[in-house]
Image 1 (spheres, rainbow, N blue to C red):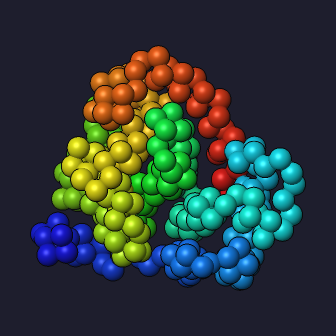
Image 2: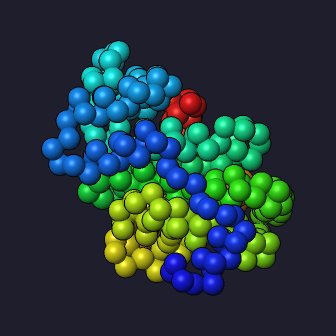
Length: 281
């Protein structure tokens, strides 16, 4: 892919893709070590007081449902587990790229958080083995949009305006018309630069076209379906209340029937506010 015309065009238009924030990089590197301990993560994360505060806030939220008040970072790491902490660190990193918090940034953040929460919910429903991995894939699936907004804000504003006011227009189609590539293609490159796992890179790169996934198709289908739920619930810039979720490829692949869809829509309408409140960082 690095030699493809799409790669060349992306680099020509965006310049160098951003690096992962420093503390997040150190956390991801440490978590790749099977000997890593809670104290190891504490030493890294505590270097960033803002991130520490964010993690403690989320650890005590109803979203993660801790049975006791968590006042120390080490306790949060132990109570929540390494995978959840990884998700929170990446949520903080994603938030850092959306610091100029206008309407577009607000829509991108809400959609990323909504898709993360829905991915985790769907993963539980289909008994996917790693629900926190699904959460992270949902959280990061639109990192390509975040980067395009960072590097080409005027172009992103043009895309968002067309999609926001034209429900029949898909984000990817408008991106292809205006940019010559889409956010999933950018996201795959970012995931590769940030050294995400092959499975995570695939889920980000294939969330628009999950049928192309070959490494771990279930993860791509979960994120694709969560994305569809977000569109129907009008979370983010793409809004399609009339979307028939049961007809999505991913709903059929994951064997999600209409009764389950109706239940998930009702539950998530109630639960999304708690996730938004928890992750307003």
